[in-house]
Length: 449
Image 1 (tube, rainbow, N blue to C red):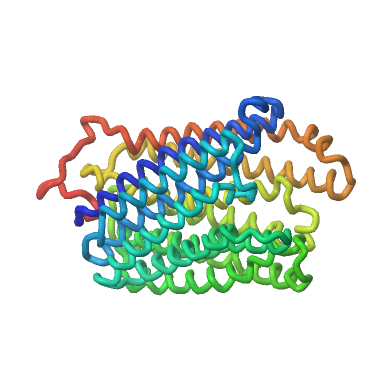
Image 2 (image 1 turned 45 degrees about the vertical axis):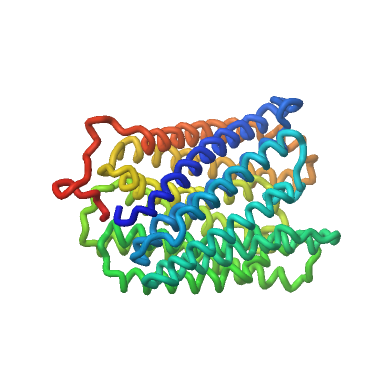
């Protein structure tokens, strides 16, 4: 580790992993409710479990992004973070807001808009934390060396934070409300977050493969251009059936088709960098997560997204388990696996250790990825049957749900594998055996420095 202020990232990563554990356990609980609908219905209703599951996901991913920025920007800018104190204040605000949101959900207080259920004071807290972050990171980058990685990361994080303003706009007109809602939800995960993903992936591959920076930067700019070109107008695939003009069906279908391209480029980029790489980096687990992230993102966000994005297909499939299949694999590949790749790379340096627990770490990768892949296939089959029975034959929703129980049981089993993998990952990050401790120094430099 070259810069002392990078230690800020350690606490962000710890907080993110704690919420990661809560998120997957909440998902497993929600999965069981699909099998046994009355389970905990009076103590912990399904809508509360779902809110905790999805909100914990979003917050821990953001904590991972913020921590990754605090780790990589000092190295890229070749200077310390402008104000580590502000970074810690930001973390405290985010954690207080998270606890406040969960507490309010448990007592039935929430905003009602999916993913944006946070009480108003929590939304303002998140906005303040985002502004602190932007000030801190921008001042660091402006005072230091500028690189393509910092430029793209900063663009993604600025746009991410500015789009949060739409979380406060809640018009009475339902169509307008849903349009603004998608300005946050879609333009986060299918535009600005893609820039963050591309920048972090580029940093990891630069460090892990030793490929020339010029090569990485050329790929990075092409990926960013295609992500913004397709992602912004691709929002139209959410406007098909919410009361907006019919031309969105064509705009959404055409530009959503192009949304596959940036994910294909990121997957190709990762494998080409490894193929061209000259460095035999000792942190094999971080490389596995980096390659796995780009590959699963292509299939989850790209292929499974394309399966039901054309309006003629979406007319029948929207809101079914096909959507759930796409959402789970896309989030896991594009953002969960990417954050875990960053944790795997950075934590040994933050703890001043050589890469450790790599076998357990890689086992967790295969458990989580295998579980998520099986879950995706199961939900895809369930969604196809649901589409036909419910949308074509016209069977009642609950009748169809009863007929899908066998798929929900399999989904629960896949979820259990994901939870075991997640707990193994957290263990691999936090517990270091004595015989794996190698104090860094002239004889044993920390790999990656």
